[in-house]
Image (cartoon, rainbow, N blue to C red; front, side, top):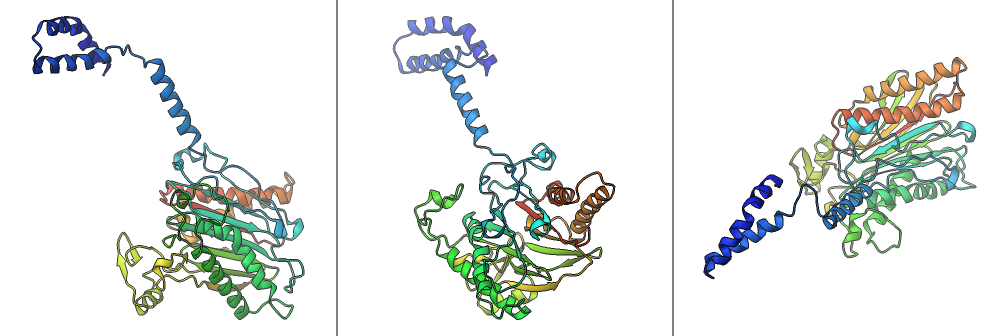
Length: 420
């Protein structure tokens, strides 16, 4: 544009003089108007005017400040009911780095814990990935049961929630799911480890209660929810918003997993990957039959979707798709063994591009490295173990991004080894 303006500048003076001699006609006035445009552009001397430079500088500064990093750094802290949520509320909007630039953002949130409180060591990472919005949330609550609970031993809560439509259902699960589960477990009797049937009943009631709370959310409960797109609309029920939920309760002798949606829990035991949950996809034979029996349809639109809309057959929320999409979880109770190595919870941003076996191999490699360092006396065992879990979670996230995962990626790695 600068070259065009310069060429126009060479003939501007002569052309204006010629125009002033022309009679006042419509064509003359149009010609003078055109020349005035070039005359204004002629003021461009290779740099912007001061006002325009200030305006552009402000616009650039605003865009930089409004484009957050992947996630802020912070350790996972808290024990018992005072534990903190670790999720991604700060990063609800803006573009996020791809796999090639992810290494430049080591502030991806990760954390670990020590075993002094009986909690297994763990690490987590949650990133926006290639999505415009961050809709995943993670909640970790060591020793989350109420004081005086009838269930013996310390139990630790881990949850991964993958929202869709907006983030507020995932955030609601992050804030409340562990409390609801603790209330249901607190009513358990007699004072002993619940049976498999009892676990199933408690988790099903918890998920149903959480679904009722999420479905009644109308944006007027007063809780801050940064980045929630529903805040931009008039307060109303958001029937089109939902979230998957995969929850693991790690106790002294058992691992209880409740899953609703296509997030997943995988156990590494004796060098083998053991899935503790099954994805609720609309084309899964039993799910397809259930949907059709309820009068719904599965339509293939960029993959199988309930009524051509939702790519999962179970979720919390999504009131407009009931009764085809239900919040009832599938619950598995697994007895802990000496050969248990790690437990991985992750959203489908990981599992879409990484197999169970590959994920377990990556985590075992990180844990094995920390054990060798501890055996040589080059570092404290607990510190190395915590870092190994965090490194494993971050490495899995990088792997998912490198394999072109198109979704948010949230990973929790739990070290289950007893003899270290």
